[in-house]
Length: 191
Image 1 (cartoon, rainbow, N blue to C red):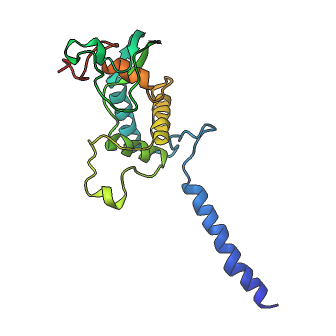
Image 2: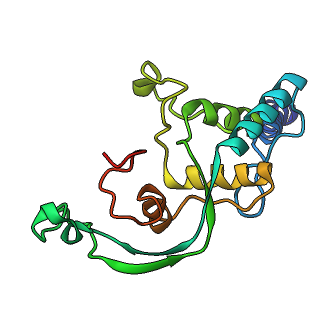
Image 3: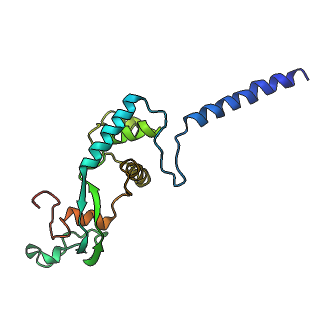
């Protein structure tokens, strides 16, 4: 019987300690699973967040909605001889799409952007796997999974005070093709 209290204190107390530590470091998320900004940001972290939000706001571009033909528009171009641009299996034939107006960031989210997001929400840093860590650059576009990207967009929307999601395929194509024009390369001049 003398070993029972010792047994309880040796095995149960460490469990309480581990549980308490894990609870304190667990990032907060809302009911939709969107990470929330920590309430204990230092002044320096708050300044970084404020600067980041201001930069993101200035990078947003308003895209006026409209109708266009989405899909492989190769047959509409003179030089293709009526053939599709690509023989890829995921290309869709042209079909009409109408979009409401929306806004989109002019730039891809970078690892540096995600570093700020991770810092202020307590999320793990992205791109820190051993195989990627040596080539990871803060200004490189972040290669992340869809759900993480969606949560980032929704969190950023909360910071900007506007509803925000990842762009749909139709929105992306419409914006890349300058409101649905038959532009082959999504650059500033189509070349």
